[in-house]
Amino acid sequence: MSAAEVARELDVTQANASYHLRLLDRAGLIRVVGEERIRGGMARRYRFEPSSQPSVMRDIHQDLGAVAHAPLFAALASAMRERGTRWAPGPGVNTDADMWVSPEIWQQVVTLVGHASQLLHESAEPSRTKGTVHVSMSAALFRMDDASSPP
Image (cartoon, rainbow, N blue to C red; front, top):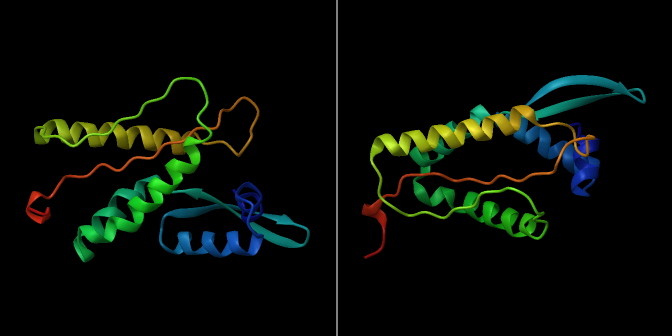
């Protein structure tokens, strides 16, 4: 999407959308996938870069520890509260899990959810494209650190 499209979709100013898209691009979370001339100016089109997300979470944890994830989880919870008000009939999946599994099962689950996320992002169409449905996916998979939990 371009900054103008993001601004319309999120009901924010184009300047605000453009600023945040540039920050996300610099952070490697999105990338420029094209440019087009519009009214004498140049509009960049951006796409989410799903392959960068797992390494970002790993880097944050290595640099700052688990506490650094608190803003991420707060943002996920906020997005789910807002999106949940627009839940439509049809197939879906939700889960909440805090359990013990083998390392092999854990790796298989992480891989499968990663593939699902990548498939969604690679298949994304522009907003409101005819024949598409508006969907939501929020996921945070991580190993638990029992040594840091309160007694």
